[in-house]
Length: 180
Image (cartoon, rainbow, N blue to C red; front, side):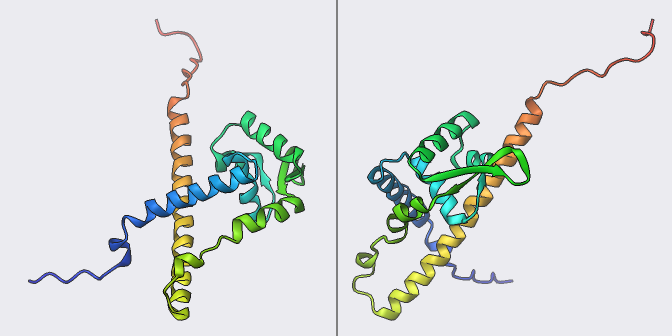
């Protein structure tokens, strides 16, 4: 029996592209954060709130930036001081607060996050080829975001599993007389 030829998949040819894309995105975020006098974590919190276009809980923010509650509280205080986020009581749990990007954050961050000049990347391409590239890059970015979310979920599941394994186990209490 002969072997069937493998379908030509772009993913197989482009193995080196994702690390470069990820580094490019990281460097770009660092530049944007520096221009706005924010830390990378502060920028991530505001950007996630803008992208998700909804309020975020403290635990969601902790998951986004990978920090504990005290560090997240400090980040939120700095962002609130600069009027980039506002905190409100959680409508479902009065003990908690939810965070949303402020209108000021939209005004300050919209251009740096959305108006990246990519014309130089498309130099020499026809309009239809450039449109095709933009569609393909958009799909690739969507795939990348889904992969990042799967990685986050897998990491969170692993953390929960580890915490359960590392938790001290209590001995069952003996009821009744001791064997003797």
